[in-house]
Length: 419
Ligand SMILES: [Zn+2]
Picture (tube, rainbow, N blue to C red):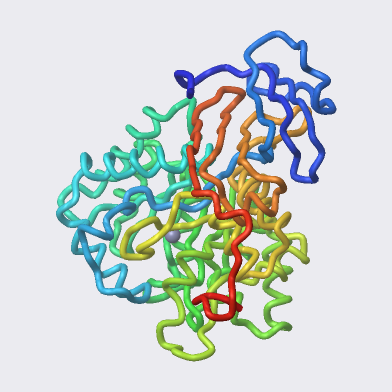
């Protein structure tokens, strides 16, 4: 039986940490106050949650979403294809979309993310190509207010090359947090990078750019790094697909520049696996940024899903464990690294305080039914509890029955299926 939510929790009993240690956890309001051996807090007063059979992780953070585009795939019914075709398909739809439609889809997507354990989201927001360019910002601002206390939502502008600076700046009056944009898609990528970073400096907000999202196109990250070296403003870049295609020596120089400028890099496996490589029917490149080189160089790295069920990605579960799975299989990270990128690492790149099952951290937690952290990624059980700042904000209880197989099946060589 799931209680009414949200519900303040004082004690978590019998959870397993990612390293396998069984523990009890005491919360003090929004903060983890103590972690003790399992059973130590048995008599502890307060509201308890029994997590026997669950692995306790830092809650997921989605560092790069497009809530204004989400859940449009079935309506648009675009042909499957690459980034330019997805942009074109969405543009046609966006002309007719309004604030109500955007808010509705954003709300449903955010609720699904929360159910799966995501308590912080950074969404990029388009300037609508129709008569109301700021509709997306008003919609997302409203949804952010509705989800206050459940999900931390950050908004990043995503202008087109013909979005005038005056309109772009108005988005910050409507609650946008960071300057974004995809300068690699504009006619002069370096000048576009400068224009966006100039605006970020003028408004004083920092930047999170869509960077170099192609296998063989221009490289803007070097310019971003050059400019951001002297910044104290927040700075990060998503996609960075081009890095994954560079020869090692060229990559090493760029990775060093990114680290020295302290730009957080956000890898987006599911969407870039889908959007990239359509021209290469054999030996298809993966289109994921150079995560191993970035991690080894000490760059702050996060990972997310990017689009969900829209022309840019027809699929997507709104699940940090789906992204973690792809980081292991398609980007060859260890399971521990993968969980870091969708949890602690993502929070770090988003500028959020540390969270997770450690004393003094914010009690943003995800409990998943699993025997181990790697099994949590593998099976991604729907059985989950999600806490945001010490309150239970989502719970999913799975009821599953499987017919019992016969104890001793006797097969002879003549029966079908016999080995
Ligand atoms: Zn994006």
